[in-house]
Length: 331
Image 1 (cartoon, helix red, strand yellow):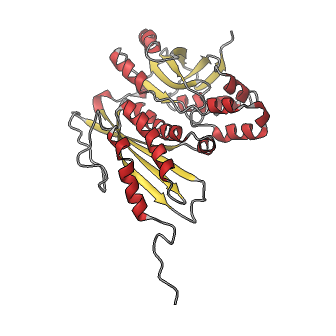
Image 2: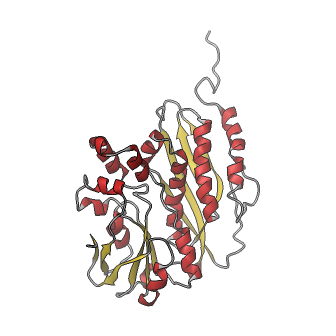
Image 3: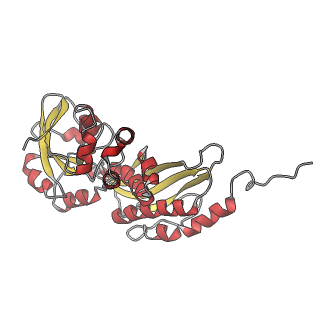
């Protein structure tokens, strides 16, 4: 009669998984400097008291890193994958005018890799610490036979809160309002199926340094939002420029209106090499084209909005013609 099997022999080590929670505790603790959980980290659910809000409205976001993760792992940019994971969801929370309060992650792999997981969490904690958001918990799943070896499944979930009276209201947008954009740090975590195809088909055109430049993590825009608050600028809408580029991400804000935008040249040798291999129309609907965040403000506040963050520039004005059309400024 064959011997009885253990869970570990089936490919899952629960003891190792439990020990990993203790190993990442230091990273978790540094995300609780501005805000703290009710109760200890590591319980079955995380709790946060909304005692600072009068009329709290909960806002949520969920996203991943997409196919960029494959290239990040190939180039050892594990911490950056953690940063991307946070930024993709936290930036969405910020578009409501809300505060990012808690973040949870999901990591799935064939076999637990302590070093890789710890580095991912370290990257998450770097960005979460920056914006005062708590790493409240998550799930690390060991799934032999389901997740192929060398593959990592990665998802992030953000929870935020905003005062009901202070929620950003895109229905307040009017003809004549101004769109101000802020620089991205690269393609961020969108369009990487196309980037990977270009890198595969034209590998000889891209140095290691070029690829490293393209892999810059998604920029967190909490600094811009905070500067706008401090400058008494009232945003009528925020847009996080992700998949679909400027047209698709901005068109959702307008009801019966639109805009014609002129954007600066997307600076950087690596991105210019990339664009040489991409259809001239498709690029505007795939990449952020150097603008990762947009705020819509009244005309009298446009100057203050431009000063709220690096790369702040006026892109265009809200008009009566529906749709968003984008072109690059000529020198």
